[in-house]
Image (tube, rainbow, N blue to C red; front, side):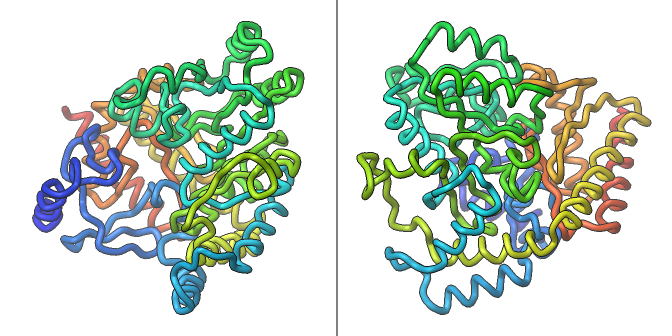
Length: 430
């Protein structure tokens, strides 16, 4: 790790904490973060020449594995024509068409450069459409780092144990209400307290930024009913779950139709991208058709569009067979490691759907962020360090989902279980 440590020291002299995203600093798990040199398939290779099985996949987008040949080829071809134009290209409409065909609730969409931008823009449109100001979100759900949404958020906010963020005026969040996930009674109380004030309800239909937390039976249906009755827009943040838990996202998996959807990660094939969309009558409020302004020089970047088209094409070609195989591999890994923990007398609760999951170091169950917070984060940190030493790189936080790609196969499953068995044996021995 000497080369990685040297690179970290250099980075710390130039970049706050040496990182461009806080979770990368490994503060919640301890140890030194390896510096990645390259990646291929299911593996990351660090600056010291070590190889790791990757279970965070750039936080979700690498569903085909790293450097997937069709994606690399598409990026190379696009780059040969120019990296950015600040003008429209045919690829934007092609990717948009693929998305709208896969996600019927999206009649029109607009591309941006990140999930944060997508959510921020969707909220603006929702407020304009309803003529209301208040946002209802849920504890542990992370919707990017825009000011109004960093209230009881998940992801790095949860990992670092901070309630929100300095630098955000109280006035900015006065119209943001955050309540417990999976509790319809709490939702009804908020609507009763703020009648005709709530512009939108936004949530991750499968929480991934507080660890993987599944919605309880009837919860999403209940939210849909409440929002419809109140004239409030229901926004699904599928930046993480879109094309990950199913080709049409969580809304296809659970049969719920939101008014608006935010996407990212997979639709850019690993390149920076986001999108927000919904019914045409809502999206037509955007300039140049309507009064809601949103813009971005790099929105619809041709490299990201090419990578997204290639990724979605591969997923469509694979169809149900691809997603079924992903789910099977993920289940073997997630439950296999949990069985190893149980055999060693270590409490562990597994939550997952499709190819995303979390090992919570507690007896469970986990239905909301308060439940997740009961996990033994110190034990998770020890587990993380032990797995990394044995060539398995997990998300460096108890409060982040893990991801499996089509490149993970039998060899990776067996290596992961063997590493976990050894780590748990060490933990059990004290």
